[in-house]
Length: 548
Image (spheres, rainbow, N blue to C red):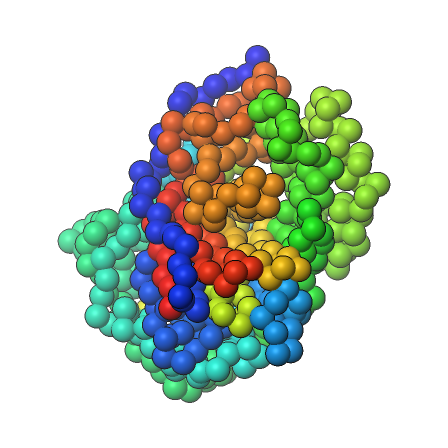
């Protein structure tokens, strides 16, 4: 018999999504905060394009959602460029991988492993999440190298121009949004780890609360200096020495060599067809995009619109559960992930998965809350240039570099990113990620850019939004707001109104009366075949949308 773990209510209570269809505009953005969406529109209006706007939004969200992303973290930018001289359905796509990598170059073996006693904390999320924090959890961050490369390959403006709104927000201040206010409470123990961290995130002996004004003057100076001097200042200059020396002194393993040798990488995206559209997503060595592709390939074998609710829910939940099981089992070695992905999205394999859904075969036990400390933004302009960025800093390490205001990631302390164990990767090796920035393109010129935060709920949230747009023909905002479910191992979670399977097949059931940020936070934009623009910021988080 399933154990129903009570009826749950929205963890953040945020239901104020901004989204609409706009005609007579030439640009749309959706991001984790309304400040970030407005920063994107501002930079676009100043002569930029979707790439410039995406960097502006990424920097602004790093200021206004400081526990979700940071220049002390990393991510992925999926870019779909229009075909030469066209704004139609044809175009090229690429992924800019600026995710975190394993540090420790030049250090002796004894420096690794935090002497066997890394700092561990239980965060107040779900049933409690164990996370390794402190300097030993910091990986080499890639944000600035990635943003600079995105601008160089696709933008029109300088890094200084793209960072200007973020500099202003950090210097002049902003009101803390509901989602960030809630995460400050969840991570309050981490945020008191050092004097420097308390200085930035505490006021009057407590963390900042929702709607209170917060400023990051040192971060403003850092962003302004990097805008003027370029990312080399962070990776090779005085700032690099300051970052490395502090982390090493605090027991971490990020060296100057790690920073100096870090490079953002241009990769070919994973692409596949779904109901007459082409989908591009983050490919290997990341596991997120292939997991999404596996789910979409499995459900593509059914006429979803004709199914009764229970069968519909069974197919979606089964595709989720088995793909996530494969992700945990198969994507463990970076060098082998491309071959693994080819197998798991092959026609023979997905046909077997379809049979498995209705055979009732078992799967691994346990349940997952995973790290939700991720953010997503999407931008599209009138030329057909679309950018989809998902970024993260884990739960945050509790480390802020003195004099810079830079919060550092704890990517090495996230078990799902390190399936081989803490400090087990080789220096320079990229971490595995579930992030799945995605772009849909159709021959008639329809263009959708979307993605989500939410750990294992990233691909399941993106899949459901895509199904709502493609199969159900819903407007973007309705597609994003629609009730969701999530199936993983022996857990089924669902929002009120979701089309769910028979719950007797699951040992643990989470029923949410209201939309909850547990199910991710899809931020999406669309340029319709007619040239109108749509944008939707998921009401499950405190996002915003803007047009230009």
